[in-house]
Image (cartoon, rainbow, N blue to C red; front, side):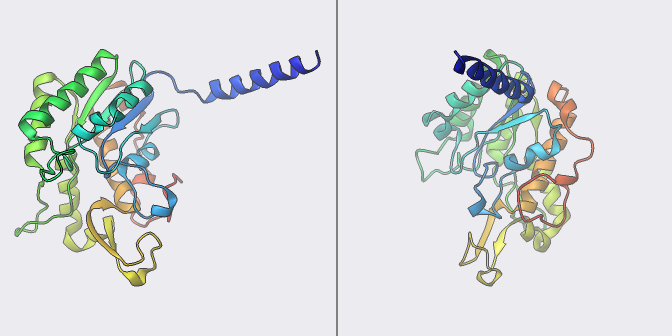
Length: 268
């Protein structure tokens, strides 16, 4: 008889803590994407995805559930059941950011390959339909730019067919769009070919980076600094949309506008 009250008290305390930290329906952002947005373990630092940093630009009552995973396209994200798991986490009113394209164009990898005008378009339409049917808000996000500069010194769009399909669907189906490709190309142009190396994974063996002991030259994936700044581009785009969660984007985002890395992926 003495144990029961203790158990009841513990249960009540647990419920109170859980309730106090619960996020209301509509205050959650879910991310469906690839390695550019994925979250990485500390032993992979400084590799960081923009989805890992997005919460630093949002009010503290907004929860970000990042389902992004390296190497995934619309095809493999569906085939592996990742999309179904994302839907299971979604509540009515929640926002789903959908960014694919990098791996959909991998013609030599049939498990990823999703031609822009057919499979990719159809997969995106399914994503949009599923989210809307479940009462959520889909937001299309064009694929973020790689560090690739043309002969004119301007950042190149490496996935124009896939980005074009996203823009067409956004217009035709009245889906909110963050044109991250366009925003990130302007961002890269502003940095320039040399300074932009600090935004991606460019390290020498002598830099002593534990995750990359032999060094690395990677123009697709982001450093901590690059991920923070791309997350800022996404937050900025989200703030311009007329969505309930748009009002949750911080007007000032110092954690996402750093010019010197903190040495971690935390929000200050």
